[in-house]
Length: 394
Image (cartoon, rainbow, N blue to C red; front, side, top):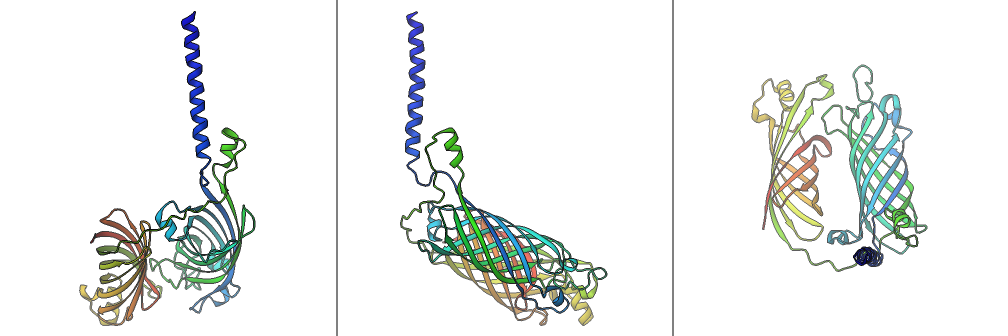
């Protein structure tokens, strides 16, 4: 009997100690002002005008555009060094749907994308955010020589979605913000299908943002009914150490697919390739600058030159160039903006200079993957580059 009583007392004391440990852990955890995950839901209304350079769609676009966006964002706290460098950014995923003009000609596009907000000019109740969104838009009504001959801007049902914005954020309450701003939206398929003038839309937007914490209801229901999780983070203000400057040499190879001009009434697709050797100098937490040598191959030039000159060689489809680069470094990502000029080409078909906007992800210290858009003759889309490469740093 004594042994049984002792056994029961040991069991009860173990459960009491376990409960005591759990209570102590919770009391320590609740002292963290950033306990949980700070998120928000954002709803935006857009309206504006088209920046259209063609002729056939003027009547279809003269009413401008209207759109609706729903976004879910994750708010950083400054726990990571790069978050403090970018003034506590937020990032997430979004859904877009819009009326961009005559739906019979243009369709009823929707889209999905990822976004990144970098705040600036912070004040107690108001701040601004520079935003970039990248994704895809679908349900477009593309050009067809018989059924949709007026659409000289869009050649495919699926296009890239790019949005640049500057947004004002006014704190209304602990839960809600009022949003207002300007933005530029671009649809393009990078000449994978023609025609591909693309659509550029500039306008204004307004919206609301609702902040919440993912652990709020769970803790109140299962752990501590008196606990109120913070909807907004307390920013960590530890100083950012100086950036270690370095040099980087990289070799990138990319490929793409393009279609000849719709004026030729061809359905053939041609391969493209890019080989780039680049040098970058990292001089700050955010920025690098660089130079590079580019080699290009465009299979569609074979058709162009065969018609123009009556003969074509493999070397006629090749071009050499050089470029200057600015690089924005965001943790493992790089946003690259490059402008270059051709040093060797057969004629002026591609113009005198080109640009490249690319997103690079560093998968390791020595390797990366990259997706970019190369232009020709200024800002006209030439092709989308898919590829990757290697690098060395010193």
